[in-house]
Image (cartoon, rainbow, N blue to C red; front, side, top):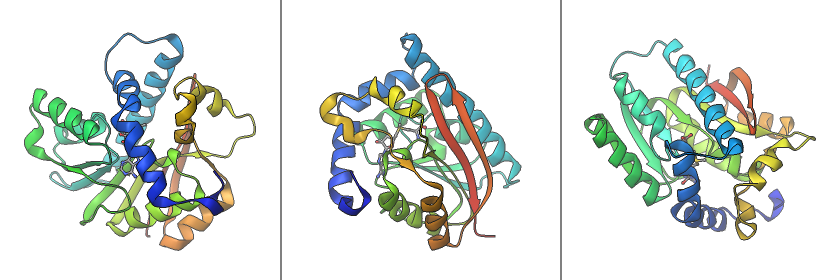
Length: 232
Ligand SMILES: C[S@@+](CC[C@H](N)C(=O)[O-])C[C@H]1O[C@@H](n2cnc3c(N)ncnc32)[C@H](O)[C@@H]1O
């Protein structure tokens, strides 16, 4: 899909349907503890490496206990639960009700549901004011134009940092191998969308945010760029 033909509503509809259906099964098993193929296992491990790094960055912001964090596109709640356990006040939002239900169930099982507010909502529509926003492996499903729209909303919700991942443009296209194994043909539009440097710079400019830290995370078939951007 080229960015000029990007239709935000259609795109969201497609992502919602995928992540409430086949995508839910696939990703819930990667984020859970089911036995996985060796390829998917590297995705699970790479994701864990990314989350550890992101958690360190968040701690380094020095926010007080009880600070409010938005986890946008929370999936099964892995990071939200970790935040809640560390004493943050968390708002967990996902476009797919299946994901939100699973995150709620897990949070309850782990005794932290009282520290998390759950909401079925999108990156583009979620509102509120937070001390920081995190958004992992969600914007990787957006082409540049959609990325820019969604990111603009996330950036407006905090005076602090937005810590997020995206897929930088990469000629080798290792990402396509990764994702090729996970998405059925008819769902290929949910594949990873790579963003060029200049597109990322434009998106940042529109929000007035600056990139403070970036780190490429590559582990087996998991490849992503972790970013910390803020207004000052
Ligand atoms: C690959 S999963 C990542 C989940 C979680 N952030 C993590 O890293 O464990 C992507 C998630 O983004 C959600 N998602 C996709 N588009 C979204 C949107 N526009 N607004 C909110 N959530 C969205 C999906 O439903 C799915 O749960």
